[in-house]
Amino acid sequence: MRTDLFQEARRRIGKRRMDQQLALSARLDEIKEKIPEVIEVRRKLAMTSVEVSKLILQKNTDIKAGMEKLENVNLALQAREKQLLAQGGYPADYLELRYTCPLCKDTGFVDGRRCRCLLEEMQRLEVEELNRSSPLQKSRFEDFDLSFYPDETDPTTRQNYRAWMGRVFRYCQQYAADFRPDSPGIFMYGTTGLGKTHLSLSIAGEAARKGYSVAYGTAQDLLRQIENEHFGRTENAGTLDTLLSADLLVLDDLGAEFTTPFTLSVIYNILNNRVAAGKPTIISSNLSAKELYDKYSERIVSRLYTQFVQMRFIGKDVRQLKQQRAMEKRT
Ligand SMILES: [Zn+2]
Image (tube, rainbow, N blue to C red; front, side):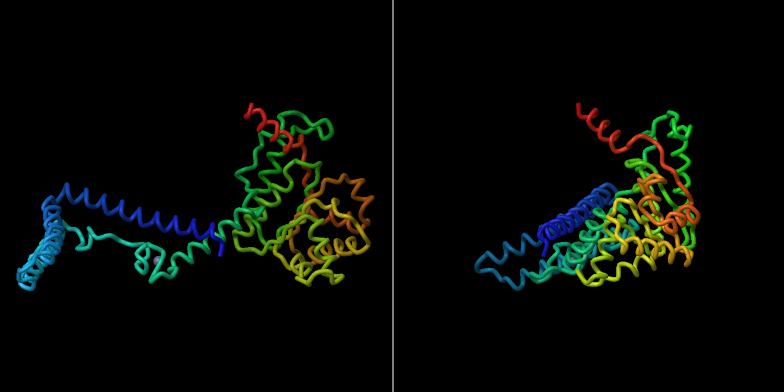
């Protein structure tokens, strides 16, 4: 059992109890204002329980008769409270404490054992934690900041960095909004730190939220995994099949992996199969066209250039600029 999850779940359930008590005290204030007599009746009701304890402590009195009398008073007061509430248009239980979980009355425990609501809360926390650490949750369109792309002309492409990247950004947003399992593939290229991973994962996250199956990872990690499974170094988890069958595959940082005849054939296999099946793949790479041709066979590179939407990323290293800005903020 994760003790931190347990503690946090208990804290949340404690907060529910507190919230219900606050809600009740707000209802009491309201009634005090509108039907003051109800409050008076409740005060008398509280008094009768004090009377009961007194009675028990007294000696030489007829406890039974006394109790009966108090009981009758009690019932009459309760009836009066309900009557007053009903006259005011309130439900009879309006001044009772409500519980989010009636089983444990928001204590998290039933007979010393953890209540269902506590276990559910722990499960929810675990899922929240998983989602937080998933790159699909970290990379969102909302966090994409165009101001990191300078409002200057790129000497190579003669394009304004920001205007160009604004178009790239809007294309990706639209692509994600319209995503279907037969959307075109995208080849994102450009030097490192220009937001390729951010935008490809933003698309992947939105597709996943729509319920499509999404596989993603760096080419390096995925190829190593497939290689290990193929050569029996790890248990076969069916990684290659997952990459082939996913509605969307994001293959990040193609070119950073160590190439062998095996990895080359796997890359070709993935591209060829997915293109033939009409399934979209988003591939990103820091390599230039020349570097791509040097590293991969012509049949791989020509697929990238002919079967994918070409998306060039330009700008100055966003990660460096972000670090700079963070430093400036601190000083
Ligand atoms: Zn409970």
